[in-house]
Amino acid sequence: MMSQLNYHHLRYFHEVATEGHLGRASERLNVSQSALSIQIKQLEERIGHALFDRVGRRLVLTEAGRIALDHADRIFSAGDDLLAVLEQSGTVRPPLRVGALSTLSRNFQLSFLRPLLASADCGVVLKSGGMGTLLGELETLALDVVLTTEAPATQSGTRFAAQKITEQPVGLHGHPDRMRHDSLADLLRNEPLILPTESVIRTGFENLLLKLAVTPRIAAEVDDMAMVRLLAREGAGLAVAPSVVLADEIAAGTVATAPYDLGIAEPFYAVTLPRKFPHPALRELIAA
Image (cartoon, rainbow, N blue to C red; front, side):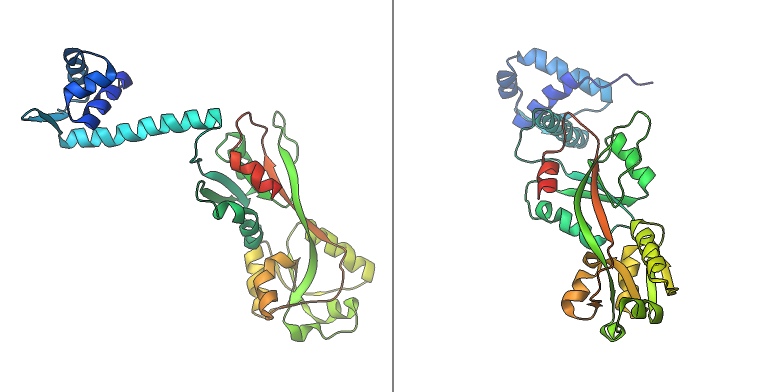
């Protein structure tokens, strides 16, 4: 097995490659040219390739040298980023890694991330998935925050913090022609419904049906809010959902909201893990 790379040698190589001249690099590093030459030679022996060709008094990178310089740039840049993160300094911040429940409204995600997307100094990495997978990645620090509609259950040895970002009232949304009924009960009896599967919304809506003594006609049961939006837009029935899910269609007038208060609200949470070095953009997003 090959021995590990000597990063001290790599630092010397990086300086020589950047300067293109052994003498100037030795002055910057405050070492003799002979000592610097020995360090470069040892690195070449370690990787098994010549890093420089001599052209007159200049040192020109070989193909292996160009590859090594590219990797050295990234290695030392990553080191600078590490220090900036731990010192909470630097002008360019690493991307915020966001996990979102796969059933979560895309419009809500966009609304939450909009301040960050408008920023030039920080990007975003967005991953969707199931709650268990996302919380596992949050626990291993592969994610900075998880967006969900339910606060996670307390797990042994894990202290998740769930902060409610907002709460959206749930309504009935569909084609305007479907809204011509005299009461909420009449509407629910006569129009097909698009319902979410097991969720806070579904539980609240079933309680409402019991209260009104209504047996509805269910057109579709869907666990993905993007599909709820599509079905409502296509006229398949009335969607039981927060208005944020169909915000574009409501604004355009292609979908209307029934004028009845269902008494149901869906919460949205930002779930984090207490960290000594949280991402600096996260606090700003939650506050916004």
